[in-house]
Length: 165
Image (cartoon, rainbow, N blue to C red; front, side):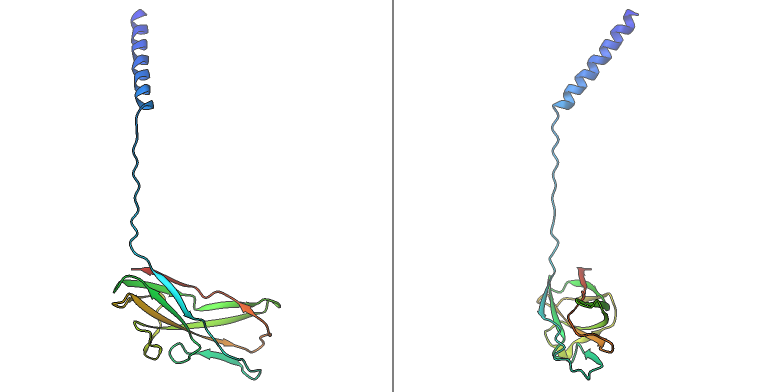
């Protein structure tokens, strides 16, 4: 029995010794982050449909031809490949009457800020390369019917998401 008691005390002292070692141990944790690159979207001009006449039944803005098309510049690493997608249809809500108006968006893009030579973008999402200056320009056109629309201010969100490939 004394033999077992000595063995138990020896084990307890070993455990106690190990516990003290852990209490005094130092742990170094190093955390680092690497920022790969940035992408910036800059709105150069908002969509401007102009003055709507009561006789108009619809609004159409061609992203390649109409001066009222919106314009966004994407800026990032030179010649990098990016991927972007956008909301093609948005439900706009009248702030007063809650009437809903559906707006269809279409876009065109170009490496230079030249709207007339921009290319229609039919894939969504699409991958493109930025220019040697790290830029890509997107023109935003739209179509919506005015039939049955009540007067007032309509709000909705056009969303475009951009990331490096």
